[in-house]
Length: 264
Ligand code: CIR
Image 1 (cartoon, protein in one colour):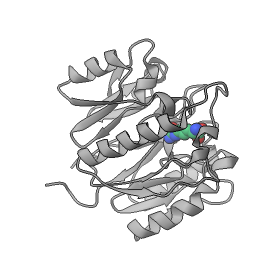
Image 2: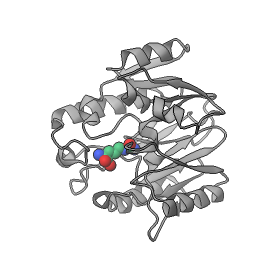
Image 3: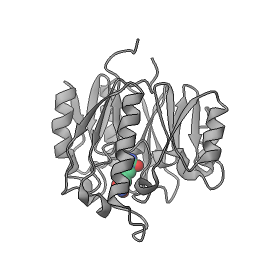
Image 4: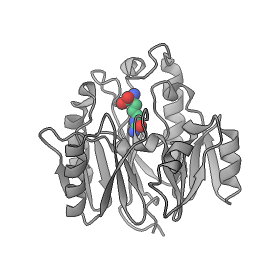
C-alpha cells in the first residue's frame, strides 16, 4: 500500500462561473467548454485508474469550487475540513463538509483565523509537508499539523518558494522515493533527503502532476517531462489542462483522493 494508492475520489463539476475563477493573470480567460472538456477527461482518467469517483454538483456562487483539493484534506481513516485562504473560497468549506460527512466518520476541522489550502499539502511516505504561502498562514499550518497529529501523521511546516500559489504547484510525489519539483523548489533544500527529478526549463507547470495507483497524470504539453517520467519506467497518461492552467491550477487540484482499503 502506497500513499498514492487510491480507491475513491471526490470531484466537483465546474459551474458556468468557473471562467471567473481566481487567477494571477486576469487577461488569461479560460473557455467554459474547454474547462468542461478537460474536467470530463480528468474524471474519466481517475475512473480508468480504478478509482470510484463521487461527482459533486456545480456551485455557481463559488467559481473556484471545482478545485476541491483546497477546502479539505483526506486520508483513508479521516478527513480535515480546511479554511481556504482566499476570501472568495472560504464558503466552499460548508459545501465540502456535507460531502466529507458522507464518506468519513472522523472529520476534523480548522477554525478561527486558521487558513490553509489543501494545495499546500504534500503527503509523502515519511512525512506530510505543509507549505506556507499567501493562502496558508502560520496559524493555519500549525493547526493543520495538530490535526494531522490527531490522525497519527507527522507533519513538517516549510516555506513555499516566492510567487508560487501553492506548495504543490511546484512539486509532486512521483513514487515511494522520488519527487518531481521545479528547480527553485529543489534548490530550497526542503527535499534534500529525497531523490528529486527537476522539471525541464519551460515545463515548470508540469510539476503539478498526479500519481494515482499505477499511472502518472501529466499535462500533455510537457513532452520533456513526460519523457523523463517514462524513462523511470512509469506509465504516463497525458491530460490536457490548458484551460484549467489559466486558472492557476493543475492536476492535483481537481480531486480529493483516498483509499478505503488496500487494493488487491
Ligand atoms: C485559486 O486561485 O484558488 C484557483 N483559481 C486555483 C486553485 C488551484 N488549486 C491548487 O493548486 N490546489
